[in-house]
Amino acid sequence: MSVDDTSAIPSDFIRDIVAQHVAEHRYPKIVTRFPPEPNGYLHIGHARAILLNAGIARENHGHFNLRFDDTNPAKEEAHYVDAITADIKWLIAGWADEQLTFKPAGAVPMTQTIAGKTDFQVASLSAQSPGAEPFTASNYFDQLYDYALELIKHGKAYVCDLSPDDTEKYRGSPTEPGKDSPFRNRTVEENLDLFQRMRAGEYPNGARSLRAKIDMASPNMWLRDPLLYRIRHIAHHNTGHKWCIYPLYDYAHCLSDYLEGVTHSLCSLEFVVHRPLYDWVLDSLKLPRPLPHQYEFAKLIPTYTIMSKRNLLRLVQGKVVSGWDDPRMPTLAGMRRRGITANALRRFVIGTGITTYDGITDIAALEHVVRDELNQIAERRLAVLRPIKLVLTNLAAGETIACEAVNNPQSESPTKRSLHLTREIYIEQDDFAEVPPPKFFRLKPGGEVRLKYACIISLDKIVKDEVGNLVELHGTAQLDTRSGQPNSSKKVKGTIHWVSASEAMDAEVRLYDRMFTVPEPGAEADFLQALNPHSLETVIAKLEPSLAAATPGQLFQFERLGYFTPDARDSGHESRVFNRTITLRDTWAK
Image (cartoon, rainbow, N blue to C red; front, side, top):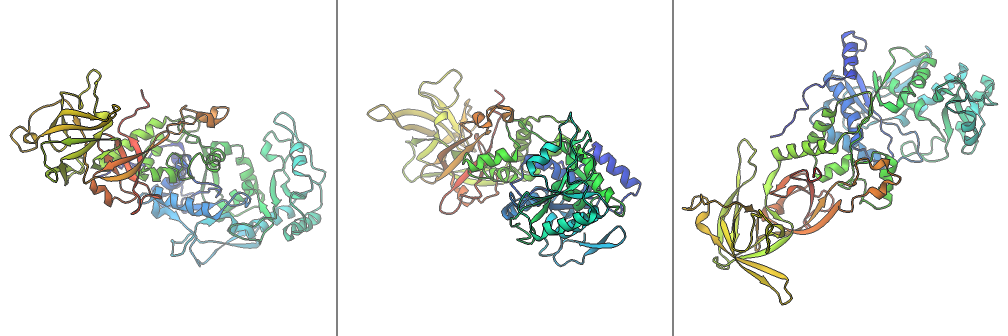
């Protein structure tokens, strides 16, 4: 069973606004969107935006659009589109996937009209069909170009010849007003001609740009004649070589929202200062109402984690990690590969709430939810990570003693599996001490301990080689202490796990831990200096034979050790690789 408490409707200021709009019948249908740029993988911070947008659509029987804001071909790649799409489907599957709206292949387009005369075709919000694809800003490039022509005709935009450096100098500073571009007063006819020639590819990169004509003295720097279009002679992953001018995010974003019928455009707090530009573009085109409106909320920033996509890319390119889906990464792909479930991630993210102030969330809160979730659903198995051989001398070679183990004690109908106790078994190095510390209740000279699901054993002999290295242990199995036997109620203070030496399989087990040693690595002069040197340890472990059938996506508790899952990339018939999702207890709290 699962601990899914994400079906309850959360309460926050954005949902209050939406509820009021629904009560007022302001919109025929609530439409939200998540608009990632395909220049990297999604991380845990994005999960808040996804679940907020998808959740509001889910709660109001609306639509949730996945749209790629792919307006910068220099940094964007098609494989990021595929990865992001897979991550979002995984995160909301079975929760709000019925609200996820794609652009249906071959859909009948609907018509939008600006200024009462110009028609633009965009994808219908009809039901998803086979072959459907996510929405993309690049599919609106024709419409966006025509909108730009309208702005020029209304005297709201002009072609500027300032270089990028000079454009920045002319903007001024937060304490000083900017200066008008010397090209600001070009005629409408000249601007139309130059902009059309920009599209035709007559000018090199950076030679000209299209800028909004707003106010160079505005206290809001984003309203100081911002760029709308720039020249980029580079192929686009979706449109190929069709375009050599590309719209800027602030221009494309609001119009893409409008074209898709988005009602509530939800952004993180850094876009508060962008909102006046968002509204200015829509108002300047005199578009039919209703218009989308932007609302802002605080980002999710967990401790011991970095959220900057630029820094995550640095980890990937520097081969500090094995890729974007490395299980130590805070990416959704990495977390999924590590064995964190979508439901656990939803529980954590939704539980953090939605606020209007930035803050840092303790990563231990996520780890607590993951442990709680996996404790309910993970099947129990026996594994020995650092094996010592123990010979039970009172068992004959080839003799097997049948034992029964519970698969999941948390299940409403627990099932059992068979284990075989044999003459030679493996136990953990940490479960033996030749010179035990105080209160050591595991195996020690003259001591007794219970083998989980089997019987009590006693230690008789420690075998070492000629230089004093431990070779193996010899002991006696007290078979009458097994379940159902006369002395099964005999008490000992310690219980340890084990696997049969003759039946166990070898597997590579990757012991993952937090990537950084400080709560706020991004605040360091160089975040790489805060890397945890013990974030990954690899051991060759001995696992009970039933794990040979384990497949990626299955979740296990290796008893007394932690939660593990087969690696989705490296584990197969030729090699067995398991990733540690999380330890059984919070060792960082100490």
